[in-house]
Image (cartoon, helix red, strand yellow):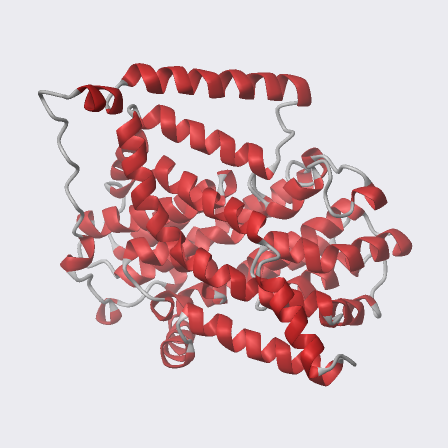
Length: 439
């Protein structure tokens, strides 16, 4: 296992480009594929690309807020104390990775932005407390926990289907999260991955001779500013816990009414963002503490802001030229009602390299996959979760969503992707087998 990991690590370090360049290369690849495989002309493909650049701005803002609210939540004092306690438990390199991937997977199930930030912060805390720890390996373990995000509470596809006005509402109506996120098969598949990933980390942990100890400079953090003693009127407002309490109470009242009206499991993307934003506001205690946390968190969203237009352009090519439908229809052509979810999963995994966005997957695959599922007789909710599984599966070798984590960890995609390839292989098997079983 260690020898296999070394092969993947060497390949990634030599050939994996920067995440932005990766998106550029995929743009060229999708353009050439559309030009070769579809009847669209050069200018028609250019127009499809240009039209798609800004076609996902709403979703981009939602994804940015997921990262920011997750980060601000992860940097509250209660969460930091919990992470410090967890970091004090492992005694060696393998134990640190096992702890990091387990905690990150639980956090990612709750909220994918929260999971990414917890993974980075816990890895840094572990590096301070565990001697002879391979920092890149443990950061990779943290990102490995992200592989279950789309089957969790912030999964874009199941939440989109549960939101009024979604893309396929006229065809299938509203699909409750009780049939997707909270259905027993999804919970069992997700639990199986969460439980077995730490064991995988134990098996692939680098030998002592291969451990690369962290550079102490990577762990330096800026000191928090002290609260002034003689406050001005403006500073009194900034440090007022009463203002935070009143604002927090408004949010709690709204959420209580929402969940009382629509049910505790009736989640949407906006509600998930709302919950984490208000938890962050309440747990930071003062308005200025939350503002500082947001200012720090927004740095991790820079990659999303820069790269989302590129992936929007790729999505525009996939939709505008029919290339995405061609890829999807090819998988449909040899599927039955029993195998349709599995091949949907494979197709989603392939498309994830070009559209690494759960919402983008829904836009590209939903209009083709869902009507086909209805025609074939495959369960719609299971097929939708297959799209979600494919998206989270190949994230392990697609560096886009690692950017917030890597920004905090101060590492690059090449440092971790060799290890996460092993996570992709193992979890991919678990999800694939689960989709072949009856739901």
